[in-house]
Length: 231
Image 1 (tube, rainbow, N blue to C red):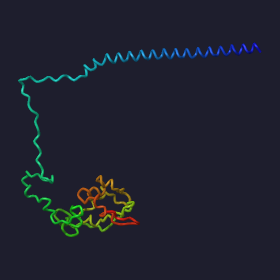
Image 2 (image 1 turned 135 degrees about the vertical axis):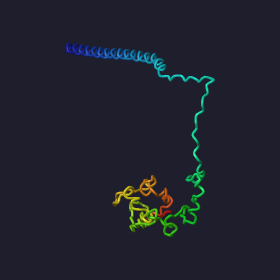
Image 3 (image 1 turned 90 degrees about the horizontal axis):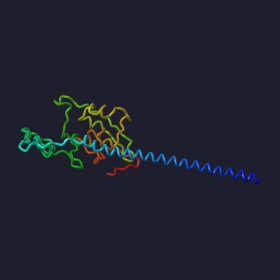
Image 4 (image 1 turned 180 degrees about the horizontal axis):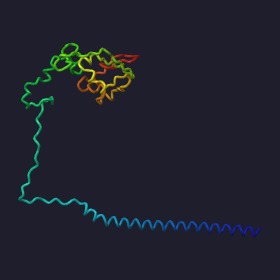
């Protein structure tokens, strides 16, 4: 038994010595590797520091020489100012024809107004205050289409009714189809965001026609379920 005990102790001591030797050799290798890497980094940093002044001297823009004291330096030419427009920003008061133009307040005097104080063009149309022409000479007749399109994808808002009748009394079909609206049910994904951006109905409304943001009831005119007008 004593022999086996001595053998085990010998094996244990040999293993410990081997492990210690391995760890020591690995530590020495890692230490040498770090020293070598650090030397390379220091050398690279020194090279960069030495090269910077040379690079700066080559890339620095040439100094601008001042003109001789007696040499005349011309002033920069300034473009002529644009003519000032009238307060409505449409007419040039300096134009010889300005006095002959009918001004907006005069042209729109007596027109029916909506709740925002803007011209209600549909009331003006139905009352006969305006009579749109089918062409410049007035020799043709408007092709009026009596067709209502009801849009039901309005969530909690009343349905939207689009009357072709009132639109085709002063617009030709080609004004809208097919560049703005595709003549197919469900092919026009209209929503208020797109209208505000000037798409679909927003091509005219909010620009030359009534403001949709302040006139919800003029489009959302068909209640459904428990929907109520909140305006």
